[in-house]
Length: 341
Image (cartoon, rainbow, N blue to C red):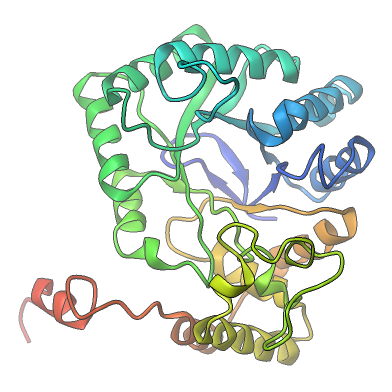
């Protein structure tokens, strides 16, 4: 396992992160504790959850694990959670206001049974709350010792840039991470969001690096999913819905991943995870698994290094092919500048 810092902070974390979104729904408490044990034994340190994951059950399960393990084990963990989405149906039950975030963080700490979390992330942008209010609130959490760092999730390029600049302008604590969706199937963030994050010194924590399971090879062209898979149970599920994602580009990417995996004698998931973990700006890739077997298989990606030729093949197959301007060839050429030669 490699270790990298959370953005420009001095806190080191493993290059893979255990995501706990399945805890309490697809993974029961016993299975979740097995995953946490396996992850830490493999050298993993960063664990990511949120207050809305299964109605707070995910945080409770993690809290029980902390309470049942020795400090020698739990002290290795850098724990991250999030707040922003609705925790009740009141007018102030969601958002990034001081009122909601304060209540949300206190509730998370109660469920976790902890005095503080290492990384507190705002789960998405809030168009209603002034960003100054949000940043001042997060800075207050740091000063009160309730959190050690804070990060952003699902922010666009201009939103994260504004947050960083406001923090500096107001002489307040700045964010250290951004958690975006990022995979071989979702590369559009490379146009603006990744450069903005790198410029601001934010470490990326990619979620859904396997494209909702598509890049593990579990779905086939011209064969609708069935059985005990996420899309088998619900083909219209979210962003990875079969009819939405099952386009020619997706199958081209899957073919490229499969070819490399076969030649290397590894799983498709290992190839896809190695690709995203090696991208510029990435600190830690979030692994979400239903079972310890899935987690064990995904953790093998920590030892895989792709060659230049393999990276080129994957980049070509997964190119989102932007329009000519502003992100395509004409826009890039217009902004290019070369000195000499």
